[in-house]
Image (cartoon, each protein chain N blue to C red):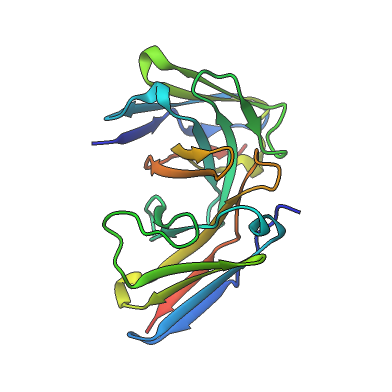
Length: 107
Length: 122
């Protein structure tokens, strides 16, 4: 199956570490990517190839992958609130698959 | 500056057609795979279709296969999505996105447009 499963929501206090998981068979062979989407805006890539940060993404964002699970960790600030989507190329290498998204609340 | 700008969205009735366009600027358009991704109101992201640099490779999500057609014009730095037999469940913001990666490592989206809203309703 190419499905990616995420928890619907995660809530933390400022300064705490938020961990958002993503599980799916495709992750056993393919990299995980993470996108942040704030209300009314296009998604922004925050982690690529499991743990790499694009230019301009703060160091408080980190990623890891083991087996069929990937994890996005954020030392959360209020401005990090939003929806986070994991993504991977399907096991066939053709399809592109998003997780269902996780709403991060920092309060 | 790398930019993607979608256009062509609007309100249509079920069964009707619509053609979306995406204009690229700030990079060599013909060097990249491109994709369409959509997001229904209040829902998550759904990949719709991709097209390779020279249009050799194309694929669709099962939900749109046979109804939608992706194409590109490298001379015009433009990507298109022809949507036929539209349904209510096709209502969404449609984003075009540039792809980066490889067949071995996988493909991902590194540049996104702001999206264009398609509403299918009678």
